[in-house]
Image (cartoon, rainbow, N blue to C red):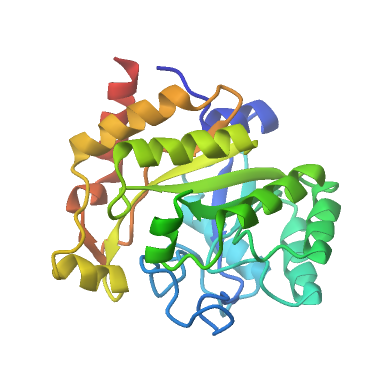
Length: 291
């Protein structure tokens, strides 16, 4: 079963393998600072999903240099994407965003920016900034949707409705920005059909890329409390592979699949423990897709 992987997309676009460097720009989130809530999404780690990002105490340039050193033995091309990953990376004063994004953009080894954010944190001035940046080097905006189902969205404390995503996607597309949508597979009380409906919806809505993420139970999250109280189950590897196969079947060839799974920080991972061996998991997924 063929699909358009992000690695292939990068090779087609830049002519070589490109590595992501995860950046922590020191931002927060409206789901944590009290604008919407103070608890964050029910599954979100204390690092704001940026557990593999560099040290926020370092400048953007210093974080890029640190990230380069981590993969210098693996990469020969010296081409990288600055991935603003931790928390909500358009949730700050416009001058702060401009300063940090331009610092990354101006680094000679950075070929693109990837900016993770929420659909409800894209005011017009931010969209205009992203359009401006995209005229210099490619910009990917990653929207954390997770699910199209409002009941699940309320349970995970997402904090916005589906129409907010629709509006954000339309605005970004009109600005010429490449949009990547995050979907979590295995959210509590969702059926396989529910998950496939989320994937189908965002593809038909016009997302350029999609990240399929396994639900992890991480320490010091409210989801962990639900798990230990027996209210939440996690997927088995076989169940997850079965869902992934059906997801790939309905994702059009023009939609880039940026991720087929994910791994939480091992020191914080509670379940499913099989996900800690990411290499084995990916090998089994790819084998299943090739059958």
